[in-house]
Figure 1 (cartoon, rainbow, N blue to C red):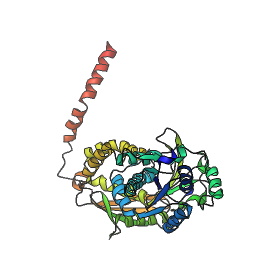
Figure 2: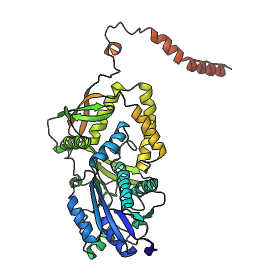
Figure 3: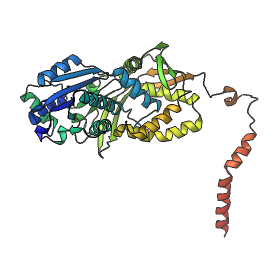
Figure 4: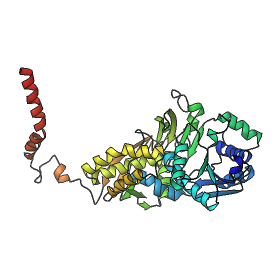
Amino acid sequence: MSDAVKKVVLAYSGGLDTSVILKWLIETYHCEVVTFSANIGQDEDLDQIRDNAARTGASKAYVEDLTEVFVRDYVFPAFRANAVYEGQYLLGTSLARPLIAKRQMEIAAIEAADAVSHGATGKGNDQVRFELTYFAMNPHIRIIAPWREWNLTSRTALMDFAQKHGIKVPTTPAKPYSSDWNLLHISYEGGILEDPWSAPPDDIYTLTVSPKDAPDQAEVVEITFEQGNPIAVNGQVLSPAMLLRELNRLGGKHGVGRADIVENRFVGMKSRGVYETPGGTILRAAHMAMESITLDREVQHLRDGLIPRYAEMVYYGFWFSPEMQLLQNLVDDTQKNVSGVVRLELYKGNCRVLGRKSDRSLYRMDFATFEDDSVYRQKDAEGFIRLNALRLRIQSMLNMRDYHD
């Protein structure tokens, strides 16, 4: 079996799992391993990751900056939909995986590799996200998923393996949890977080200060939108990645964007995760406020009814499915008039909308006012109500007849 594999492209983060996997693939399959590491906004020394891959045995190490692509083509489309999984999770890891897997498959084609590999466990969602993307790119690709094959059944066993082989990894027994970092969020799972009754330790957080320690003075921020996409912060036009970085800075400074969630994984179990999504939390609040004055009611309600399904598709790994493409096209069509400026206040973990304005606004003060107006005849509401009540009146009369009979 091992002789059949000549070259593998491994999605390599440089963390505990993929560092061990790199050495394990070489020892188990006696094959050449090429690593691929994507910069999607994580604060890591990517040159060090390349050096570590070479030191551990990689024949070649690709390190590529995909930050702008990630925000423009994955984060912004999801935020145009106001996508949120189970009401809380802003899909930071879910959105990154299809991008990484797609580029990994492109490198596999360049390298004429006959297999790809990843570090996702057999219990998690990421294995599905990676592999659905692999098959969407190449239905015949061979996939090696070490967590479903080897006998290293715990992260403690992985740390022992790494120590035995002299592999330098960031995870230590003092902080035995897994984290995933990109420009949209950082997540923490496993280890000390597996008890859902226990609060996360204060030192776990990376992107945000504690709301208790945030500034006592609120900060006001303005976000400009054009057709559903944010393009400027406080009047300064920024690229997608630079804009999200700035919102992360502002949100982190004020303790915005922390979430402690027990979510339903695609494979069927519940899992506890702790997340920091400062910029995304601000962005979603601002986008919803922008839509509140620019989106038609029935269009908004129809679109909103589809968003739980949209979020499920992202979470489950179906980013490159035909149904996802169909739904994204529908979402994007709703955004043509979602342009303008939203003003928000950041204060001790809270993000509050202060105002919104747009040249495409459907809000009319002369219709909505409680003062005198000449554009709305209040008496018209009587007929409107009676017509809408007709079926209720008929049902009531039927019930009264049955009661008297």
